[in-house]
Image (cartoon, rainbow, N blue to C red; front, side):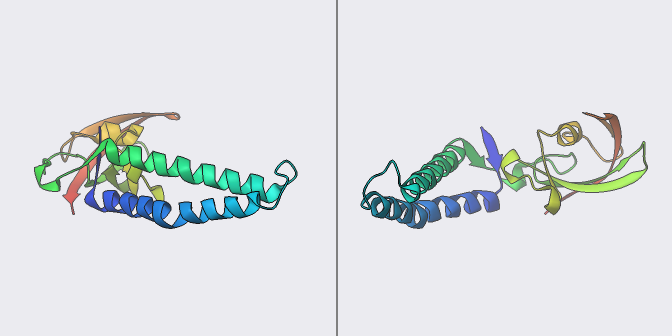
Length: 155
């Protein structure tokens, strides 16, 4: 079971709807058109249309599984004094004295450019459950990071 924010759940549902209602019918139409052109063994357009249709079906099934095996998390039910899912955490890397800020999200919402890290990442897992002022130790490929929690916010 995975937890998603309402926003991410809605984004996945919208993408799934778009794929089912718009992309897949076009892919099927393109495949039928290419198939009607004759010899399939020598038809690059037909092979590409089949690959595109296959990728579309795979993406639809993947998104359906995500929605089937996930729940929308109620932000009001989360603890406000500890790092948890959907919390924005400011922390200091005590080794380099560098301050960082990330929102802790599910793996399906991770986006480093937007400042969102997965709760399953080494840093995300180390921060989970910690309070302001506590030190978290994250084991990363380059060694162990000591991270001091400076603040926790919820949006």
